[in-house]
Each structure stands twice: as C-alpha cells, then as structure tokens.
Image (cartoon, rainbow over all chains, first blue to last red; front, top):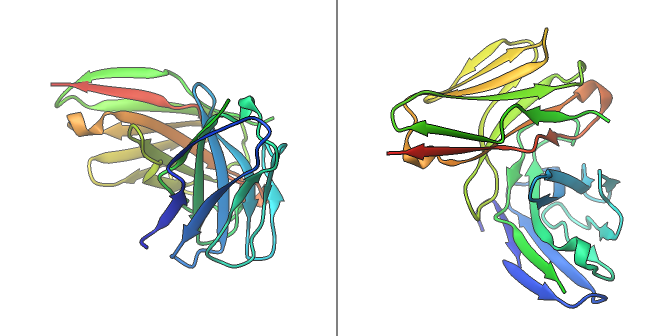
Length: 115
Length: 113
C-alpha cells in the first residue's frame, strides 16, 4: 500500500441498502476526511477525524456515519442509501488536524450510484 | 457561510502559452491556501500552497500569488502543456478559526496543441 487506497472503485446500489466505503492510508497521518464531489458543486466535506478515536461533522454529514478505530482506517457508512447520495466519494488524509492548515492527500475515489 | 470561488469555470489556451487561473475568497481570516489539480477519473493532486504571510510562491512551472487586500488568489502555469489539462481547485482554511479546508468549484483548463 502506498498513500491512500479506497474500495470499492465503483458500486451500484439499490436504494435503502447499507453500504460501507473503505479508506486506508499508510502515511501514519493523524487526520482523515471524507468528501463527496458532485458536478458544479466541487468537493464538500462529509465527516472528518483529527485523530484516532475522534470524528467530526463536515458540511454535508446527514445520511452518513464514520468511525476511526485506528490511525490507518476511516470507513464511511451509508445506513440506508438514497439516490441523492449518488456521487464520487474521496477520502483524504493530512499530517495534522483539519484546522492545521496542511496539505491533504487524496485517494482515487469511489463512484457510487444509488438507484 | 464562507465561500471560495473561481472567476471562470473554463479556460482554453494554446500549448506553450501561460495560463492564469483565478480564485476569490471571502473569509479575511483565511491563512492557508492550496491549489489542487484533478485529472479525469482521479483524485485531486496537490500542486502548490501558500500561507498568508507570503504574497508569492513558486514551484516548477507554477506560481501562486496571494493578494490579501482584495482576497484574491491566482495560479500561473508557465508554458502550458497538454498534460496540464485538468480541473483546478483552490482551497482555503482559517486555522485560527479551526475550520477545515473549503474548496472552490473548480476551473477546467483545456490545452490545445
């Protein structure tokens, strides 16, 4: 593993189903983030974690949950997917906290389609 | 809320020309800015950053200029190449306010040969 990996690469999901997007980083970064990217809206922060064991809400947290059991992993769960959650999801990490003003490194993204 | 925006959604240039991509921000407390490049089907990739105690920072073929008076940020790409074609995002954060990075909506740069 080098950098940040995300799985799956893409997924088609029926509405109402539960889905977990996986994110793993091997850089030992303290902070991790989940964004969604929609055409014309740019990148919007869903949830973040400044360090293992802590999480926080971003701009668009509704319908999503996260956990940070260890430094490397930051899964994003959609408890009951809805079509408006169709998007491309990016995981990112940075060496310091969300407010520390540091470069974020991004994963390759997960393209999710909810029907 | 605070916003970060780009003046133009698209920019078309000829190979070899210099490109200038602009970004306006509204939070006067913002003190850290980043430019990202995103190629089709990939995640954003760091290009260059600048802190508010600087007006200019140069990298390889890229320069970022920061004008805090008018809250304006620009990315200059010298001798633009077809491989520079991508969407470019600026992002800001106000570390004193404890905010995370806020991204602009992006400018699509198209480079023709």
